[in-house]
Length: 117
Image (cartoon, rainbow, N blue to C red; front, side, top):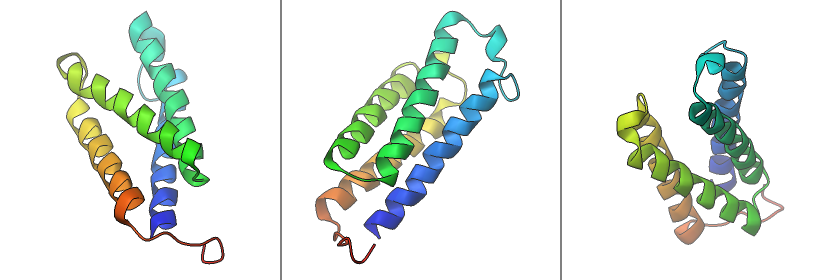
């Protein structure tokens, strides 16, 4: 279950990264009309979503650390600056839920051996 959850989560973050690529080409959000801060945030999200997808697909201690660190930074922004971000409630709840589930599985969940995966 642990590895399956991580793979599903990796797919979610890869999808999020693909949405950011659409943003870059003005196919979803209007990146070309965004301010510099919003453009920087979009690029950060693209990079961090790709890193999270890679870290979760091939789990390791470093990948776990990368995932937790990136989720905490994104949560801080989505919660701390929520009045300035559009519809950040769902995204913040998603990050909180996935991070909590991840930490619970890492801490208390059974581990699959390499032969089982």
